[in-house]
Length: 505
Image 1: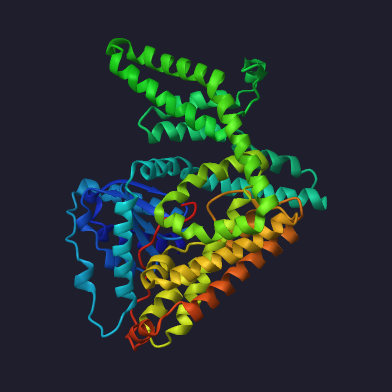
Image 2 (image 1 turned 45 degrees about the horizontal axis):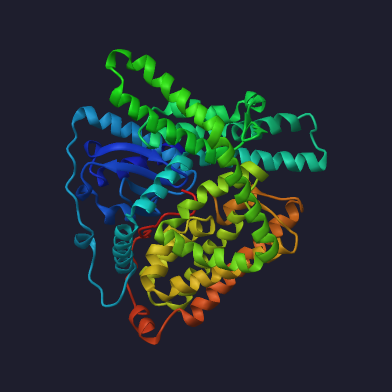
């Protein structure tokens, strides 16, 4: 029955994105089905958002993204791929698009659909501003790490379970096996980063992985560089990223100058040799210094100014998402996980989602007569509690203006609470990136024990909910806004408005 439901969802989505002939590639991340389209005008945005399984839509420069939520997207994507493959040989023609304007109905006051349209316009304007070389580069960096998130989550949860068994003394024979399962991926994460880096920047993926593998090879301990012995893993994911990027540049240079008759022999050899030597005698040391500095700075920041740091990080994370700058944090999170086993930054940044949920609840209470907007909030809140806040951002708070600011205030308060506890000595973090909200509970880890970690994180969420709610309820609306918004509206189908990029998707 579950398979039938996932196939039905895929079948409902396919014609609304122009049919099989309109799709050039398919992928998915934690929450989204990502498709590359030949003709964007063939997409029926309004009908897509009206589908019960769709939480929102996102469009960036490369892909059209349909938010389905964690778990669901991993099940729908294979069904969608199968339908596309079945449809292509048959030559199904793309369907004619129905514009959002043609599907909207007139109303005397602002409805959820009109707010969604405002959100789409804001998204489009922000997209234009975000198409700078720096932000496009950061997006490519994110594309390298996003495919690794499922393994990070799975191994992180297993590591947490293993810690519980170790501390309680239960099933001692299983502990070493779970430790191996949880640590295996992390010990080779540099290889996967190298593979994805080469793939993202147009090189041969396996050559990127081969060069990055040098970093984790135990034999590098016998090599001296900059007057000291190298350590296996030195430089971590940052070194792997730099090494694979260098390999791509060397490979492309070889492709230009090496004759085709010997290309298959010369290009891979020169690529691995040159990039490998530079990695061993330069990049490993430099990336290791940078990684150490990142870890030391994060520890110092939270230990000495945790409350203020949490306030700033929690309050500014939603604007960072708007600017596309949050993607720069992904390699930092991964570096911290590689070094210490968890990232202390993620629980603080997750408080931004709590402020967003609190703000949405306040909007729901302040607008009792706007049934269409309340329907949207009801449909988006469950995903919001689980850390998927995109529908609430672009469908509720950002188009309304003030509630977006008050949502940031809630995130700042929650971040300050978690940061203060860290400053007082209760340090903990997340063993993986990607999840947020309630979905982050299984991934929390720290020396103070699982019970205290869970309590502090839950306390931060509660603070974020309460402050986001109170700030929005009392300061999120002007009188003209209430007059415009709080009017009787006919209920509309439960839709999820367009979304922005999440913290780790």
